Length: 326
Ligand code: GDP
Image (cartoon, rainbow, N blue to C red; front, side, top):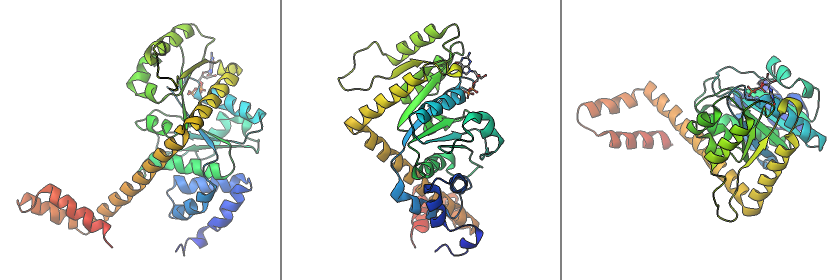
């Protein structure tokens, strides 16, 4: 099935075995396949499938400069202290360029670069159809299969898919900082709705109390909730000094336990997988339609519409039938 692919690199099964054995280079290679939308990806995903579902996936989002990478690094330290293996995926929804485990990652996470229990990886789309919507969960799957207990998915740039990427996590952390007008920005981006845990970072700065108050107000934390509903946690941190990070881990564990108890974790993961399948299917469909444009079948349908011989809905039905059969 993948003849021809074998000549271009190590056997996929072999790579997956090495990744599961903790070899960072194998993990990096598998993520490169995801990032580059490699034709081998189908085979990679099939090989990874039996090893998925163990990692706890935490999304971190917030405006640039709020302290995401500082907080992520501090969280890695905290999780490593308790012996957990950690994966970090820094995703940039606004950049078409890959940071791919080069200089950027070392600068960002310097103190963890030599720790064999930590995988750090930057990722960008390179303009593929479907983009990060499918790439991020597949990269998470690689890290999961490689034995990470926790995967931190940090959105680096701000882009239209920022909320979507954050929403692909088991738990979403939204970071704010005083004096950045974040409350309002966050509300606009629809980010308040996806936050399970809110971190007010730079609590050493003036205005932290006001930011916490504003947040409580916007989240309606003073209001009554149905018993059993999740009440988003608000944690203050000074990430640059590691202060409050243990409390963030505590809030994460609390949310994870709450989700597990109520079946919410399974529900979120099922919804996530459904979206992933949908994205892959729609992308495949689009690619086939693009192929059809090449052989003028789409143009022929369009010409019939212009001539009044066909309506656009019937034309779309014909198109979909044409690309899905055989
Ligand atoms: P990101 O763009 O959201 O990833 O933000 P960074 O983690 O790169 O942090 C932006 C700047 O804020 C850096 O100069 C950090 O050193 C600084 N910073 C991070 N956390 C804190 C904090 O708790 N207090 C203060 N005063 N500065 C911080």
